[in-house]
Picture 1: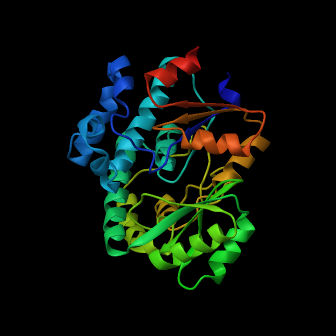
Picture 2: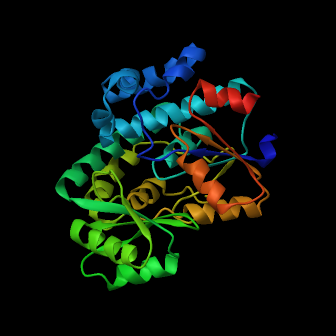
Length: 306
């Protein structure tokens, strides 16, 4: 496993679970510093939330976003402590912030400051604008886009996750109607346990509130390749990151395009850093002939180390 051919993928929202990150900190006590730094910025004990909060509390946007990011950074640091690094990084939605920290675009403290502002703005927007999201499995992007466009109300594809899975989002009634129509066509439609329609215009108030906070952050050129959800390609222009990150909140996640670009560049080792293994599963469904791993706890880390 060489860094030149290795990419780290950072987990997105919804991957959280009670107790996540605990075994990594138990194995490498120095990783607790990541949680401590985050806790100081957030104003609550983040490690305690991961270790002891019930699923319902951990699922709140203001807790899940920084918690997933902290666990993701712990996983990446645990790999580094064992000599495993990457020459490219990508994240799914929220995971793009952990990727920015890993690539050196922002300091870890500023990464958590961004996530604090983002999660608070998104929580507020979700409470004000009720929406829904559904994972659609087994239908082409073209079929899904057509059904959404023909559905009354506001609904559209927002997460292009793999060749067999696309997530739609929008107003509750419209999203349900589109999901029902796709299910009638033979698709599997799964309602996601999220607070609103993320990556859609229902989050515009969050984008507007978040941007001034992002304008206070210093952004640097990434030290390794950094991929963008918005374009699905390598991020090459960091001249207006506050505007880009605000746009990210209301724009589709083009994860399949990112995987295709990584594959074309010759990357053959994909390591998901963070809770669960959602992204590892998406890679498995999308790319052939590549090595796929996930690191979320001491056990999964031991597997990759052999």
